[in-house]
Length: 493
Image (cartoon, rainbow, N blue to C red):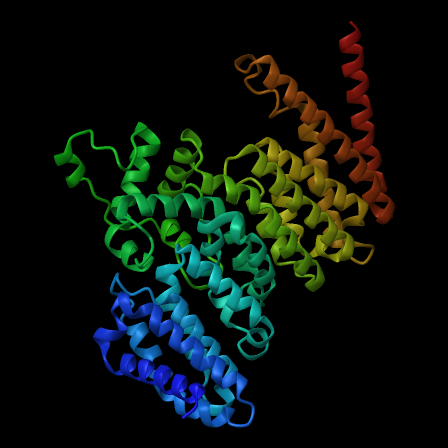
């Protein structure tokens, strides 16, 4: 017997014994030798061209049984099986056709049973992304729904492990986008900082995330964690604080977990869910994050996240999907409260929205209702004012969707008229002027002037596309000129 044959027999016995003996498979001390044996057997199968199929057929039953036993033992905290399962999955992908093994159930088992427990392990996280990149084409062709289904879990990899996995994650990212994940993915991207904060709170409350299932933590501890988040937000204490009345703390409970909190921590895509930003859970998370120093992990994700929409929007522009734009409008004013982060994300949102209208002007007519709604919110906050400015420009520039959309253009024109007359009368901006400081008053006046310019321009452009609107446009512009002259005379006197 040659050395190669002896090595083969030794490694095969090691795997066979482990597959049969659960105590051996679950023994951390035996893990390195078992992992080495599986790797060597896989190498033998790849290197032997003539007898490869025979070798694969001999080793497959043992490796398959080992996979089943390893996934079944993942609930035990001493089972570091992530890397081993990835090696076995690679064997299934390489030789599945030879032994007629469908790798899809095995891949899904890995995500649900292993990665959900070990995403916080930097070694397993890095190895998972490497595995997905190596097999990217095969996965997208043979299992196109796999990565889109588990995109929330894969986002946890980058959220928890940060910049050291950014390059590998960006290579995987396009595979997360599919018709079924396209819309749900966007809110999850912009909420990555909140996901980090939520995961850090889970870790403080329940201990290390490695080896623990978030799903089980949610069921047992989510109400208590939510209560602690709210306590931190409104009293300044932290989850780990030991002060206060322990008896009252123990008796304070919440009957049901906040749905937004559960939505943030899910592992699988279950469709587009509305995230209620006024809920106690989200309000507490945002308030606590604003009042406390940012962790290194949060700083990293605030830096990484704006680059992810760049890739996402590139795909969205290619597919020309107008369903995304109302979501962008809604999320423009609901972002994680970090100044630089909000600026970078909002800039990308507005640039994509304008690029979409440039590419498909008829989107403006199709999205008439959400556009009218956002124009009506122009005075509610600075970010809503900026959104209204960009929408006014787009409506005018593209003629309300084009010459064939006369009804939509008329309704948009009426909204611009209303906004113009509200601006001229200063009905909203003039309220309680005596109660606000000079800086705020100056900012409001500046916003009012900018909005007036954009609205006048949009009305004029819209009327050039749709000539039937010219008489009303002349009246509106005449009122604007008279108002400007009156203010000028008032200022000079």
